[in-house]
Length: 575
Image 1 (cartoon, rainbow, N blue to C red):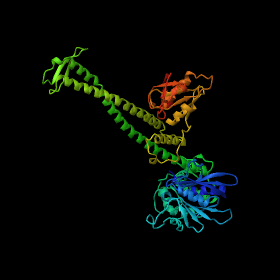
Image 2 (cartoon, rainbow, N blue to C red):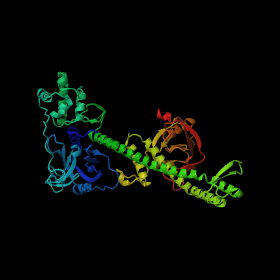
Image 3 (tube, helix red, strand yellow):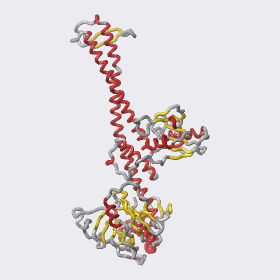
Image 4 (cartoon, one colour):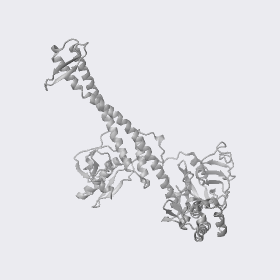
């Protein structure tokens, strides 16, 4: 993930300064353990300023409105207690080239600041610290005790001490190319590495785009650069410094991140706030998505493994109970041929009534024929009782396995992060499993709790233009089938295979053609566990013929009067 460097920070703060000063502080909401959102209102607009001290994604920019859920963090409560109703009157750097921003809050513009919110953009040491007018710390996002750092403790009631000053050389617009080149090439080495060692205020991402623009490979040694190379690179260097001075930045996305210089751009952005918010939201969502998907997949595998073992045990016991009739048959034979028994016999061979085949019956020599028969009858009764007890247990376990395999299929279909909707669909699965008591809520970090299924279904159009909706998890499946579906729609599902509920939307009087049915069946096959198969049996019926038995887990239904059509997932897979 590309970190915010001095150039980006200066560009973001310059844009905020131009568009959001002065602004009234109306609310503070803490999104997560690393990010607060401050509601700002000017004479013309209102929005949320995100301030994050995330170790990989520290930033300050205008973000999205926070979710409407309770804020349980004390840091945000302390901030709104002090800053509520005050005006944000200044956004300054505490010193040139330092990545520490001072947000000043006063009763009204033109008056002395009552509070300072220092945002320290320093990677894993990033922080947000609130002080009063005398620079005494009121609260901090991350407090640092004397034991953790004797050099710079950060604790309530102590005076705020800025981070240690930069020790490297500061870039200067007035320095000549000869002196600049001499400094960078004093010790031969890779040009990117030498620039980073020679000057403060640079970052790897900035140099990557600078060298790309100068048409120089990042690992090119300084002693192999031609005079033309040095000229092009110095021109970019000067352009960078002039941009810092004038504030005329060009925000854009690059192949591997973003730029505020316009170098290496592949997707221009409307403004720096939008660029930073989109980039870091996507990057953090990608991290959360990968982590959550791995956690859920591992948990499901463990649970399904245990349930599979339990089911096999029940099946083995049922297989044993299949021998019950054999015990009764032998007992009946023995009682019918008591005259053939002799004391001390360990085995007797009798002819079966129906097949006329000889059957060997093992006997206990210390018991007579009647007692041996009684023992066989007891074994028969025991096995019959076992079947009566085990069958409902096996059904219960198998139902649980069917449900979790349905969940597993839903997770497998959300295989990579593309938009925030993918993460939301995965979070709904997590919340569903928590609601079904398969997961402990405290084990899983959550940005928000989803009270009901979202409607971010997969959406397609058939060849004739009919809309197709596809559930992305069990809660969405239920919502789609029992809340969204209309009387004229058609409901599709892979036959006896875990997969999504698929709805072909039809208006009154509209009849789908064969190509529409086939297209929808292909989708139902693709969004099922059998998506790698060549052909998949798919059923379809009217939604009013789909039922949910009482007590059934999310996503599981029964249906009737269905029609079978063969879906071809490969057509969707290869399209």
